Structure formats: C-alpha cells, structure tokens
Length: 428
Ligand SMILES: [Zn+2]
Image (cartoon, rainbow, N blue to C red; front, top):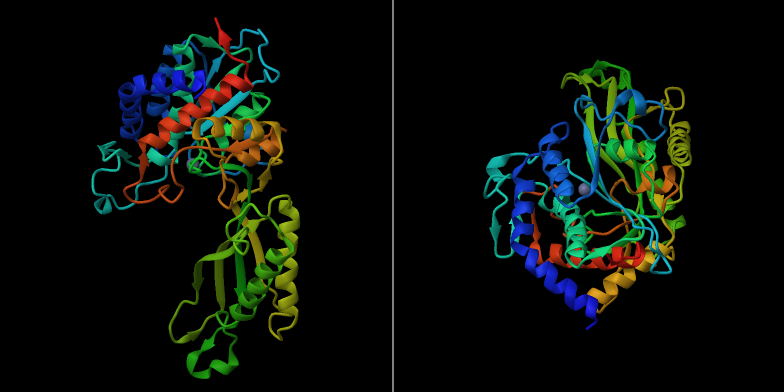
C-alpha cells in the first residue's frame, strides 16, 4: 500500500464522527428549490473554517435571461445563493499536472412527496446500519460533503495545492441548473470540473439531453351518437404515437455507444401527460399531450427538434384529416442539451488513476441518460467535466432515500488523491 494511501485512510478514519455529524446537519436542513439559504450558510461557515476564500454569489434572473442555456424554473429569484470556496494554490509546481479544479455539487433537493410513505421524517438524517437516511442524502449532499472533507483531509496532512481548488455549492440544479450557469457566467473557471452526483463511483463523462414538448392535436366536435360526423382527436394520436415509436427506434439504431447499459434507451421519447376532450358523450375536438424528448450526446437541440417535427409531419401527411390539420408542436420549460467530455481527456484519466489507487480496480466509465450540470461546463464554459460521486442514482428522488456512509468515505479518499495529483499538492 502506498504511503499516501495509508495516511489518507487514517486521516479520513479520524474525521468520521465529525464528518457524519456534518452530513446529518446538511440533510436535516431542508433545501427545496428556492429555500436553499439555510444549508448554504452551513456550507459557507464550514468552508470558512477550513480557511478557504468564500464568495457568495446570487443567481439573478436579469443576468441569465439572455443566456442560451437559461431555462426558467418558475421559482422566484429571491436569495438564490451559490457558495464558492477557493483553496488557493501556492504556485509551487510539484507535479507534471498542477492544474486548477472545480468540485461542484448542488444543495437543492426535490420534494419528499407524501411524507407518510417515509419510514422516518425525510429530514431525519438518521443513521442506521451504516446508512444515512433523508432527502438529499444521496442526491447529493454526500457528494458535496465528500469534496469538502477531501480538502480537510489534505489540510490535516499538512498539504497545500499548487493550483486553486474550487468547491462550488450551487442551487437550482434539479430544475435546470441556474446555479452552475450563474457561476459560469461570472467567470469561475478551472482546467476541469468534477460534479459529485451519485454515480456509484462510476466515471460518467457523457450525458444525454432532454427537451420538454407539447403536442396539440385538433379534432372536430360532434355528438357521440353521430360520431362519424366528427373527428376524434384522441384517435388521431394513434398514427402519431406509431411515428414516435418508429422514430425512437431509428434514432437508437443510428447512435452507437458502448457507454450506456441499454443501447435502446439512451435518448428515450416518453409521453408524460395526456389531456383531451371535455365530455364523455362528445367526440373530442382536442387532445394535448406532453412529454420528454431525449437528445443524444453530440446531437444539437435544434437537430433533435427538427427530426421530431419532420417525423410527425410526415405521419400527418399520410392521414386524411391530419394532412390538413397537422399537430402543433410546442417546446416549453426545460430544454436541456446533452454534454460530453472525451473519455481519454486528462481529467478522466487522472480520476481513473486516483480511483484505481484507492480501490485497486478500475472504475466503470459510463454515460448517463439523466440531466445534470455537466452540459453547462462542457458546452458553455469549454471545460472538460465528469460526474463522479457516492451513492446510487436509484436512491435519488426516492422514498427513504439513503446513502452508504462507507461509500462517502471512499469517495473522499479518491478525491483527496485526485486533488493531490491534479492540483500538485505539497507540504507547506
Ligand atoms: Zn443531483
């Protein structure tokens, strides 16, 4: 076992109780979108206690409105505070890398839903059998904590980085990423970013995108007893659904990637709501459906929209009614691009190396089909970015969400080793 690994193991073990107490406090502090201030105060005090230079930056709608990646999450812009802690580099170059690094995590959590379904309160932070329970425990307060404690572990070892390490604690990720976007717009940059989402400690440098659409189909109302004199808008969905199904398959046939577990579900097209007709004994004159249209890594949002539109219009042409009354497509709310970092990028290699040293085995490299702030770094900050963090994404947003504490400690060690190599740590 390398010297460094022994030391880091010991240091992280020594921090256990303070670490878990901190994590409990984060989970016990609810941080639903728009209500992240209290948890951000805890984070900023912690970062200050480590001697980091702390900035608190507010997300403001008027500053984001014109940005192409901005999407309005409908949450009032009041005290949407982002916290950045900078562990300043001392400039003493010690490794070939000596680069700056951003460690990014979001503090906003999704609603716990029906709290009666939870075994304990969603804000209990209770620890049982090595797991800590509560909303945000997995997605992703543990990931964020692992970055903070990786810095603390290195400090306890008397180390200092040659180049800056930035810890970004952001808001608004779940509803579109305004926190990270704000920091990108304000010019916070580094040679690479690691986003500490729950990837089960897999390296995920590739992410699909997702667009929200509405389809409006027009029919012609009539008394149901005379249904042939009307046009049933609900029935007119059928040829369009078939076209969507054909399109989804064709798109997946075209896109080949080894990085996804299910090659048929990389950029799925899914219908989420349906609303049509206004009376059981009338032929419905309208149908509205809403859904999510997946965007492949490397595919532009415009190209994805165009393909969807063409497929639907082609199907409409083949139907006697729809050819003259084509469906109307609306794109609304979240319009999230895909994002990707090359799998042989320096940061992916460095993270893999750190992971290998701690685990004695390689991490899987995977793509993810859910949205995250990765796209903002890769597409709008020109920075390579990777998702890597403790916890299983299946726990995210779930009832009785929890995190394996050993997993959190393991992530902390990997991050400490990565920072030490990437940012060139040396003794003071
Ligand atoms: Zn998350």
